[in-house]
Structure formats: C-alpha cells, structure tokens
Image (cartoon, rainbow, N blue to C red; front, side, top):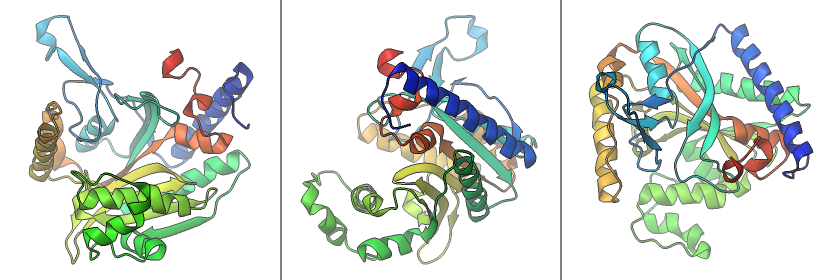
Length: 323
C-alpha cells in the first residue's frame, strides 16, 4: 500500500489492522498475558503538562460519584490497580483520547496497546517489545535491523555530546539552524529538540532503535536508579523514525508518585493550564503493586510503518475531520 485516503486504500488498511491485532493477541496468549478492559471515563485525569485531556460530565444520580469525568489518555492507572490486586500479567488494546493532537501524524482518538510484566525490569521488557514488533513485521513480510543504545551513548554517537555534562549552549549549538525561540526552554527541552530535529533524521527509516536509561529529570512514571548520574529506568523504541513505544520499570512508591503528580500540576499552573485531579485510587493501592515493567505502544504508528504511509488518516476508517 502506498498511501491515499480513497475508499479502497482505507479498506485495505482496516483489513491490515485486523490481521495485526489478531497476531498481537496470539502473541500474548502464547505467553500467558491476559487481555483486559478498563474504564475509558474516570474521575481522575492525566497530570502530564504536555498532554491535554478531554473532559465531559455525567448528569445521572449524584451517588455515582464526581460528575466531571476525564477521557483516558492511556489505560495505565486502572491496569496498575489490577496489578496491585494481584491480577498478574495483563494487557489492554483500546482507544485513548488526547485533546489538541490533530494533524498529519496525530488524531485526537487512537489505539494504544499497553501491557505489564510482573517481576520484570525495563531491560527485560525491551527484549519482549522488540520480539513483538519483529513478529508483527514478519507477519506482513517485513523485517528490521535492531540497534540499541543507552541515552548517553546515543547522544555521544550521533552528536558527540554528553547529555549530562554538556552546557546548555553546547546543546543549543546543533539547533541554531532551525531558528528555535529559546524563551522558556530548559535543559530537557533542548535534549528533546536534539532528539526530534537531529537524532530522529539520523535513524534508519526501516530499522528498530531502542534507547534506554534516560536522565532522571525525564523519569515520568519510571523508577530512578541512584548513581552518578542517576538514571530513569525507562526506554523508548523507534520503528523507522517514529517513536513507537515508551516503557518503564514502574514506580510503586505512592509518596514519590504523589509528589510527581503535585509537581506536574505546579507546572500546569505555571503554564496557565488547568489543574487536573489526581488518581487517588491509584495512590491508595500503588504500594501493593508488585515490582513490574510496563510499556505503551501506538498501533496507528505501527500501521503507518507497515503500510508505508505518512498520514495517520490512511490507516483509520475515518479521521477526526470526517468522524
């Protein structure tokens, strides 16, 4: 398939999606990982300052709880609650929603695969994530060369920069040609811009690249491993030049997690964004969650690679502007 939003092309994309999702389910069934479904609407939202959620209202009986409800941006929190109950290895394949993300490569609703492995760390989960992506590629007659770097080694390999030791002016230097306004940008912003503007174009357009052990300041919901420097135990997997999956050795310290939620909301207030209610049910059970690793994978990004297209509309039945 070479692209296009005509009816025949979209129908081919839908059939390919069905094949991929069937293979995905067979992959996890063979490994004893159970498919579950969790709520799409929640009393809590996602505090991440870089993600905006859709909000709606429930007009039924007040005894049903908070009227304001948030459409999930991922199934992460309820899946972790299941893990804390002792459910065991599980995954969810379903729709998630992000407000304001619409364009050639983004749709406000899309499909996410997320799964968790008890007793694993992020490095072991990298291997399974690579196995899954290779399995799905092979099912469509494709293959990919795999490269694997620590975060620090990747920046040294491609840019000759140490992401921990380099000054901010040294981080900015490769980006001067892009005319980026530096107002309000910090060290992590420059590192992210180096990834998107300089490192992603260097990546093999048909390969798999895994980056692991990020700066502690980019920990999100991952554990931080003490050391010099301390490292966030997370990874990202790129398929071609698109980030496909983001995984963590999961934090299960409720006090630390509450602090991260509070810091997120502080950043949101500083940026003039609304404060988001945190998931108190998650915090109440997080201390019982077993040591585990989890990862989220964007299905449309995988399908775009398989189909050889650049527009997300080419792998959807109907994109947002036609929904």
